[in-house]
Amino acid sequence: MAKSITEVLGIKYPIIQGAMAWISDAKLVAAVSNAGGAGVIATGGRSTEWTAAEIGKARELTDKPFGVNVMLMAPNKDEIVDVICREKPAFVTLGAGNPVPFFEKFKNAGVKVVPVVPNVKLAKRVEAAGADAAVVEGMEAGGHIGVLTTMALMTEVIPEVELPLIMAGGFADGRGLAAALLMGASGVQMGTRFLVAEECSVHPNMKQKLIEAVDTDTIVTGLSIGGAVRGLKNKFSQDFVALEFSGKATKEELIKRATGTNKLAAVDGDVENGMMQAGQSLLPLRKIEPVRDIVESIVKEARETLEKAASIKL
Image (cartoon, rainbow, N blue to C red; front, top):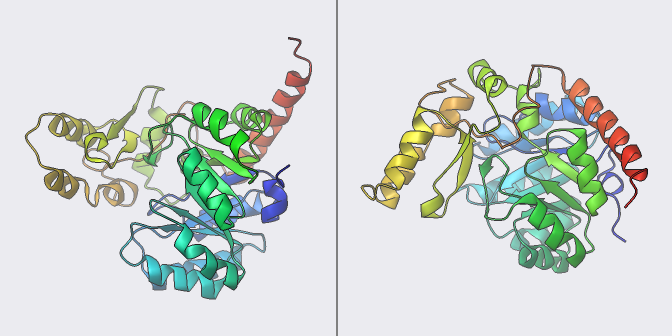
């Protein structure tokens, strides 16, 4: 029987805040950790100086465990890894690449290792390599995605490994958390749900678009070039997909067109020409509210759902 993720990470609730590039900073991370979950600083696109400073800021804002994410496609990933090993947050999450070569360095520094995996094969591999837990992410998630849904991954990965598994992709309320726990997961990771938190630094224009969005308002770009990214439908994403499947643009041209568009939306607030990365579970995002209220409402609903489940007769 795998340990619970609350035990592994030393947190109150089995809720991890997904690392979102240009968004997940010390303020949001500390708010999630103070509310009983585990916040995660996103380093994608950031410098080593920013990363070290943000870890320091988070420590000033919370005495609870928090993590740092490493995007393994980043050109400065090795330098970011060195900063994390020096600063020693409670844990690190690693995605968008092969995490195994970095395990020993983190372990030697006393940093718990939580890789993000998209399938059974990689889940088994990171378990054999000594991961402390793993995030298993379905294609319902926002940002870079794989090809399997969260339900398929829960069905297939959970029985195959003994690691504590944190499910991700499409989780936004307590019912989802309860479902994951009943399936045998140790917890869930939520990113999109925290985009409308008061403590989230994402541009107000993007927050408003998220609040206004309906259930069918996401789209996947880059599917044909091996770099699928989910976000909200807007001029950029719909024009990109039309060009992508027209056969009139090369892979290099498409990559160039997409570069910088995440920051354009999240930081600059250009919600027409930027890529508003977000997952499919949009309807729970109805208002801007404090992180603590979000976490407590999720936990309350999860407890109620689990109580109802206990009375179901089959």
